[in-house]
Image: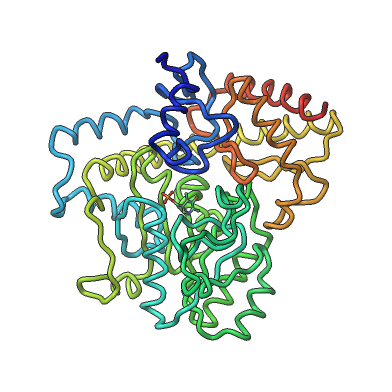
Length: 426
Ligand SMILES: *Cc1c(COP(=O)(O)O)cnc(C)c1O
C-alpha cells in the first residue's frame, strides 16, 4: 500500500482507537501524518510541508530540533538512557528551575503535565488536610479525574463536561468557577470550608486564549492566602513561554505550587512540580504524600530540560522580544484583514500566543468563548492548512509561535490568513 496520510490513517484506525494517540490530533477527514520536522516546519508523508503554529501545543518554544538540545541529548544517549538511581544532572536541572522560578523552592521532576498537576493537588490535600479543590471552567490541567471537569482543550472541543469512567465521588470534589470571576470564588468560599486548593492557568491557553482580567490573579492570591488554601499555578503552557520565569514573573504573583511541562523539555517528555519547601517536603519517603515514577528524572529528558532552560536563558534578551514582535505583527495584520472584510471577530493575544474568535463579544471565559462561530473557525483551519499553515485544529486551542519562525514565515502566514479569512467571509 502506498504511504499516504489517508492510507496510514485507515491502518491506524484498525489498531489505534480513533487512529490517534491523543484526541486533539484528530480532525476531519483525517490528519496528515508527519515525516519529519525542523525549525518552524513540518513535512508530511504526502510530500507537503507546513509552517508549524501548533508547535506541539506550545512545547516547542525554540522550534523543532534546536541544535543545543539535540547535541546534549545525543551525548547523553551514549551514557545510558535510564538508571532509576540519582544523577547530578537532576540536581542541576532542579536548581536551574528554581533559579528561574524562585517560588519553586523545591522541585520534583515528573514526565507529563498531567502527572505534575495530579501531584500538586494531592500535595495540597495532604498539606491542608482538606478535601475539595476549585478549578475554573475551561481550564485544562491534564487528563486525570481530579481535573477533568468542565475542562478546556479536547474535552471542550467535543463538548464533554465530565468523562465517562470518571468517578462521581472524585468529580464532585472538584468545584468549578468561571474564569475571571473572583467574586464567584469568594462567594463559593463563604459556603465551603473544605477547600484544599485553587488551581488555575494564569493565562488560559486551553479555551482558545483567554487573558486574566486585571486583578483576577491578584484576587486569587489574596483570597487563597486569607483562607489557608494552596494556590496552584498550572504553568505547563506559560512556564518559560511568557517569560523566563513564566506567568508568575510576568504578573509578579507568587503561587504556592507551580506545575511546569511543555516548554521545559522543548520536545522531550519532562515536567515538574515545585513550590514552598514546607509543602514539597510532604512528599514521600520523608513525607506522607506519595508520588513516584519509573521514568521521572530520566537522563535523556533531564539533559533535554537542562539544554532547553540554558538555551532559553542564554537567548532571553532576544527570545522574548522576537516572539512578542512576531506575534504582535501577526495579530495586527490578521485583525486588519478581518476588519477590512467586515468579519466580526476578537483576537486575544499575549507574548507568543494568540487566537481568533468569530464573535462580536469579548472572549473572557468559557461561555463567551463558546459563543464564537465554530463553523467559521473550521473553515479558517482548513484553508490555512491548504496554504501550508498548521494551527491546532480547534477553536479551543491556541496559536503558538516559536523562536524558529522567521520574518518570511510571518509574511507567509499573514498571506495564508488573508486567503483563509476571505474563505471564511464567503
Ligand atoms: C498540556 C497541559 C497539561 C497536561 O500536560 P500533559 O503533558 O499533556 O499531561 C496540563 N496543564 C496545562 C495548562 C496544559 O496545557
